[in-house]
Length: 346
View 1 (tube, rainbow, N blue to C red):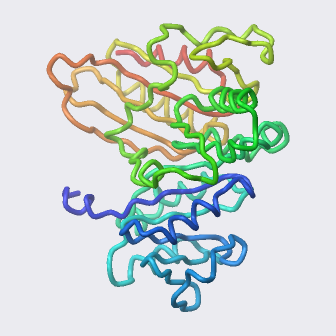
View 2 (tube, rainbow, N blue to C red):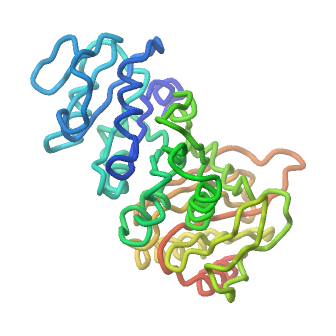
View 3 (tube, rainbow, N blue to C red):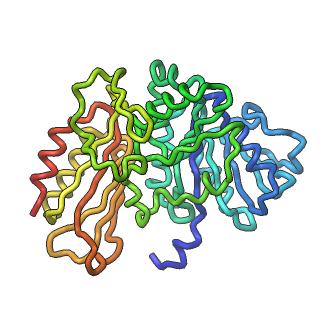
């Protein structure tokens, strides 16, 4: 594909989070602030999300124009159809934001951008952003598997309504989030006040950015976090960077690394079979690979069973050629994955 075509793809942000966590506040800001950009916001039900009707200028049946030039439309069925319609409108959008309902698992929406060729030709997935309620998230994580999915799946997480909890409660919520997904960028907000650039235009699904798979808050502490499973989880007061360190019983991330070159003939069949078998449990995976006798880095990422990858660029002179992969998911057979990965070395 020529550079030019891919440069023109419209970035799409998938916005998820529990009802009442603050998604609507964020969306209303996008639709009303004078940011000088043209955004299209796709919501499930126009009425439900409480878009301020004073902001609406014109409306055809599903598309509402805002007085800041953005538009808002409702999906009453097929996301692909709505995206298609948006792409045909005159004028370009700077970005598209797709809001998933409060209970939804963001995966199927994200998969649309991998699977549907028409959609993939003209748009690209930018990031999954999850808005979490500082006060209620701990309870939700206990009783709602979707809440965990939304955290595990996210590239960016806003812990919103921080003004409603104490500093200790906030630390607790953040530690729990980190236990499920150490890779997301976490922001703490009140009334979803955050520069839109921290939410939009993140490029998290861009294979060039894939090496941001180092957990930012673990950098530089030199610990190996894979082997402290024997603690009583709730009393694991291991203060790293001031945060307790949680291991979520059910959801975890497995990170693999080797500095030995991999054999593509072993690696590809292995990873394909792994995602076929564990697919429903693997929410996200991504990695950078150094293959034997191959001067280019191979990068890949996946959503459940859908994998996408390609040679990305030549390894630079003096760049350390190691392979790194992360899987985030439920009840993953960590030891088995480690051993099988080890046996993919050339």
